[in-house]
Image (cartoon, rainbow, N blue to C red; front, side, top):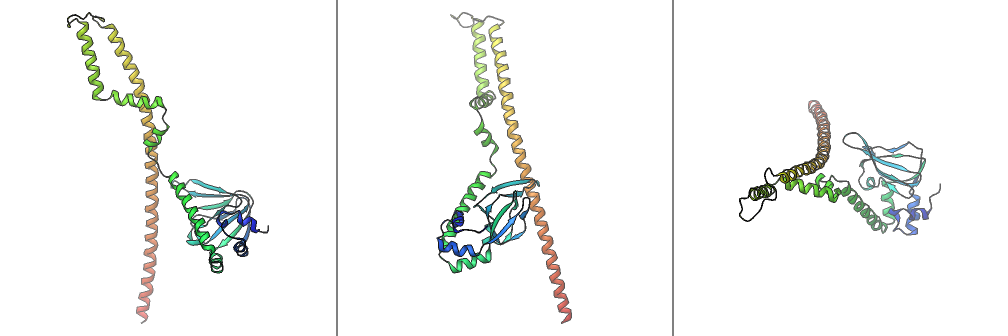
Length: 281
């Protein structure tokens, strides 16, 4: 497939370049055909090239801290991936695999530098587009960041569930106890005719009061159980977050240990070479 200037115009990264700049760019691109299931690169591999999808689809994924595959995106025609390696050559932060037969264009870092030397005005346009990509990535990271479980659940509660939480909280307060004690005391005092001029409306053994208290107890027990279920949901989310944090910490410690071991090996090797040179001298 021969890449056209019109196709390059449809790629967001090159949307601000003019026809002459796109023609120069076109000459520096390499073509690659990938079959379904073929890895274009894997997480941790060294890379210094950007990929543009002409046709087909490519899946971008990473392994989370529990070793499970997490799909970050599925890119199709005119979309790009791997652009970070153009400016920061180093280990890939994700893996890319063709999920169907695909045709891609490759732009290497050396070709980028040559392109910017021949068309320096294009660098401003590329920086503008890359800045926009970074801004979009920031928004994506903010959306994927760990949220407070209390805030997440509160935002999803119905009006009835919020009311149940409020009643459960209020029924466990000192104010609720004092209100109930005051009502019961006044009820009993009036109905044993201790207040002159007031006739008993629920004489001893206070049948209506007994029924009211029983209904109140049943109602409050149901509300408290509902509130406890909601709190259990919060606790499960909180435990899941703590588990992920612990896995992340463990993985970071393991990675740090590997780096220290590698550094120790390199230092030992250099010291051995230095000792050999001193002995030879």
